[in-house]
Image (cartoon, rainbow, N blue to C red; front, top):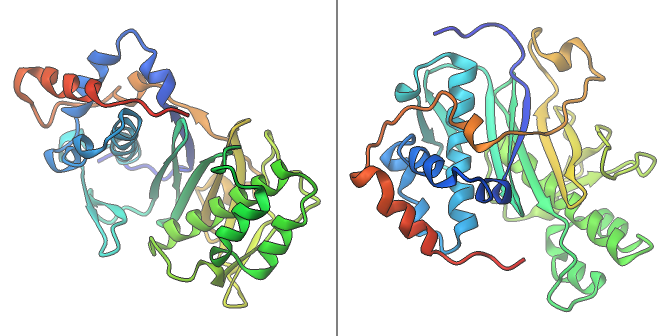
Length: 297
């Protein structure tokens, strides 16, 4: 294994639509489904929509691609397992120090890694459709997930779009910390109280790191949050540990910024190997996949 002491912090996204539009999509898809284990593949055919099945596949590949890239472990011997709460972790190679996490929503599957073991990422599409509800009605329907201060901040925004953007901002932050801690689903999301600094302009191109969080009224200052945008319609949040090893770029330069960069389907498979050969070279699997309906956004 060639695990070198260099920074392993990365932020990647892969677009579902861009993948579908590739001329070589079938060829890449058939290789991809055979480049993950049988267990990793099992859930993919269960998704009703094509986008969700592909997003699940991309999530599996992003984890395996990054594990191979960061550790030097041969692709076939990399193994992921899950904690009791369902969070995937790298079992082989064992005792790695870096953390990996993926998220999917809208057009993107997002990936974040950190030089420390705990990292969480969430991406959200800033939808304008709210089932014919006003922003206030929508926020009220989700009020149990927000703290009183978060509700005040959402409701006090001057426009419908800004209210919903603030809602998605908080949702991203909460998902990111739950994924970093490995909690998964939390019963009382309103016990997490995020405090944002309105002097930081939250918009495409921004890289905001001043947000803090309280849990049951106590400041959780072991975390740093990165709030950015993938594009004008997708916001993202990364939760990482404040304590980082010497080789980390964020330790060397606390003002460093790593924005999400786009990775292509073929780049994701650059070092992939067939580890789960399928009958007929996965032609049947591809045909079943293409029979799934597309989502209507």
